[in-house]
Structure formats: structure tokens, C-alpha cells
Image (cartoon, rainbow, N blue to C red; front, side, top):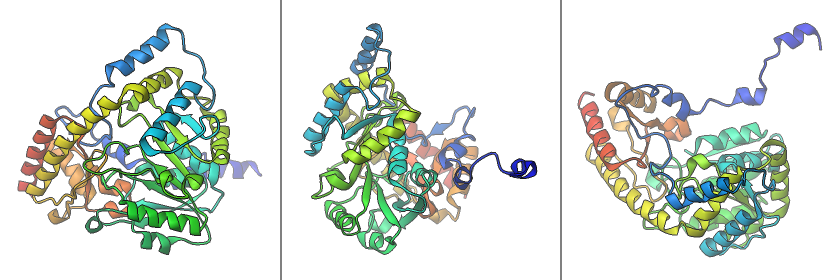
Length: 392
């Protein structure tokens, strides 16, 4: 290669160039430093991590447990994860070979994509969906294939639409239910139909179940618990959302031994292991955090009803979310695009919400609004949105 050619070559890879900056973070640059703003944007609980969980981390520090753990995670935490999955989803995983502790579900997703994809492999994913799904597939050399979902179908992934998108290059289906950004859940019968497709076409399913415990009046089965699915599912979960532990960055993956070994190999060369103090806190959460989950779900449910009712009363039709902590109101009636609505709302009324387009083409005409913020803040935000709408 000549010196001139080397100089002309970009400093970043084509894969990095192919992905866009996070639509969430890009938008929230506008929020930085804005006094009096109300944020309905960042997807994290406003509760502090329960005190008994924080104490477990403090105890670990006081006893000098500050070293590396096993690459796969401390044996005690993997035992607890195995017990938790057995009790909550009747799934039996060998802690020593079928479980991997990661730095949040985000790392687990990245590892899963890199472990199973070869260049050009296609991955089907719902549209709209969490912002990282498409980018992680691209960075792993794969090709994300969005499968549209629709408000009048409760944003559920239609198995017939999935079947139409399957090609000889399809390698996997990436699910994320309860869904970010819509709050949709999938009924068991549709999950079963997707399971049949996965078996028929020999596909791996990556199932992000980080919101699995945050549901309202419905229960959501783990995809791996469906007949024949444990052998072809990479289950992703963690303690961030349901125990209010986003900053601790503890996630995990459960799956077939060969895939978990591949993910662990990448993890060894990148993260080495998740933080030992965070793992100590996660053990306490899994052992003794059930009451905390229920208390938070009850509170989120009250906020959910206020937010959804509020949007509908303002003329912004809002699908009733059944899981996670997001509402996804439509702003189509205003004639503004998602981006225009969100930017003007922030600049004129200091209310931050994320344009639906950050989550895929099907998100046009919607906003993602997180109700994991206090009820008074939600009520004030609705008043400001009402004022904003009156001027349009």
C-alpha cells in the first residue's frame, strides 16, 4: 500500500461508519445544562438501589474483595442466577458452562452477536426496538433486518411477518420483550409460533429479557422456556432495571454451552470480568430483592396509568404499555414529525422525550416517554405538553 493510499484511508472502520450515533444520546445533548427541564427520556429507575443491596457491596469492599473474579463471573453469583432462573422460569442451567456474567446486558448483546454471526448473516429484529440492537448486529458483521410492528397490533411481532423476512442468510432472531420503547409484551401463542419458525429454519434466538419482571397484569414467559427453545436461545438479563441497579452494570447470558464458551472467549479478551463489588451486590439482589421488585412495580403502575391517561386526554393517542416503563404516544395528529415535536417541546417547554425515530423507521410519529420518574414530575410534564399543544 502506498503512503498516499494510507493517508487517504479513513481513520475509522467501515463498520463503525455504518452505524449512527445513538438517537437517545444525540438528542439529550440538547438537554445538557438546561435548568428546570423535566426528563422523560433516560430509561432508568429514579429509585436508589435498595439499601440492603448497597450494604452488600460495602461489606465486600470492607473485606477487601476487590480483585478479579473468574472471567465467567463469581461462582456464587452464577449459582444464584441458576437458582433464580429455575424458580422464576423453571429453566435449569449449569452454572459452570451455561452462564456468563457480563458488564450489563449491553455487553451480553454485543458478545452474543459477535459469537454467532459471520459476515453477511442476517438478524431479524422488531421495528421499533432498542437502539443498540441494530448497531450491535452491524458491528459484528451481520445485517439487521427490521420486521415492522404496528400500534393497531399492540406492537407485537407478527409471526407471519417474521416468516416473510426469513432468507437463506438469516442466522438469528433478536427479541426484546417487554419492549423498549413501546412497552409491548408478546402473547404466549405468538411466541410459540416464532419458536416453530426458529426450529424450522435452524435459527438462534437472542432474547433480551431485562424488563421481564416489570409487567402490569400480565406474565411474560422466558423464550427459553418454550418447548425446544432452551437449546437455541441466548437469554439475556440482568439486575439493572428491576432492582434499580443501572449504574452497577451487572448482566448475564444463559445459553447453550458452545455459545456461552464463545461469548466467554471474547469477554476474556475485552472485559476480563464484571466488577467484583457489583457482583457482590447482585448476589444480594437475587437472594433478597423480591419485595423491592414488587414495591417498584406497584409504583410504576400508578405512574403508568397517569401518563397514559394524560396523553390520551390531550389527544395524543397512547397504546397501553403492559411492561417495562415506557409510554409511546402518537404525535401524528399534530402534523409534526417525531424529531420536530421533541425538539420544539424541549426548547419551548423544557420537557425531554425521545423521538420515536431513534428506535427505527416505524417509530416515526411517536415519542418515547419514560415513567420511571416521580409522579409530580410526570404531572408537571403533562401540563407543559398541554400548553405546548395549545400553541400548535
